[in-house]
Length: 338
Image (cartoon, rainbow, N blue to C red; front, side):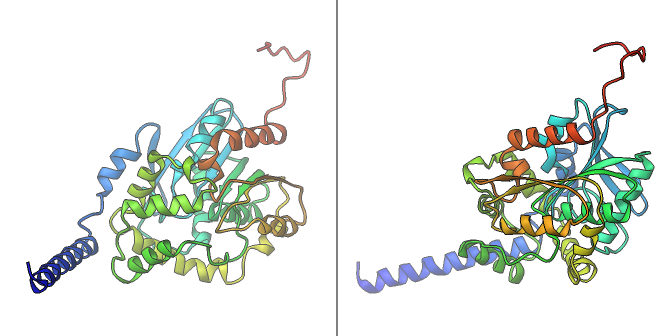
């Protein structure tokens, strides 16, 4: 075989690979790879999930635990959903009433009204609390869900008994410390395939957001991938981000933090590439008018509740038991012993 034939064969192979890649990108761009909403709902919204009409939104909710227990509402982070709290909800729901929901534009909740960013979610949270008759409750939030909790506690101090927060941004966070491969995939998504990220992207991005990637489970990758690739999801998220830049990040949430009076627990992963360790100390200063207890996890990244669910849930439970659990009946009240 001559050199000419070898080069011709290589050229044909390269051309074939280019054609295959172009077809893959085209079909991804057309949405052929996205799982349908109904298929994701069937996979991710089994019992005890319900869907409730709240204003203009159809909200995916899980409401577990004793109805007379102290109420805890859990607020997930951006690009996740209520599944983020599986471990912590299981650790609390024997005693606490645990309410968690997907807030639009994330997860399985939908809203026909245009997004207004986090202020709109603050209003939605209050509507949910009113519909369920929740007058007093603790808020557990992480990342943008922690910002949401702070905004709500500032606006409704009479309703919030305590705040348990992790990975809290009170202003627009600095650029994340991701690998070149991650940034290359982000570039391809933004410029070539705006409607889709492959499963590999989610495995890789979660691995970089964990302090120890070996803690990442296949189950987490599955729900993360499915719920984030619902058709139309990325356009809704983009609209939410644009609204939020004007509504919250233009000024930050420091003034709101200063208004909070409820006790606060900060659980911080010191290996977080998105919100570095120093921001925990900054947050303590911003919450100038309440007590803040801080627990650091040296080898944990952006998702303490996913990466180290048992230990972080135990710390949360201990703190909540001390701050908001019902006191034992006083002697002589006639209450039967347990």
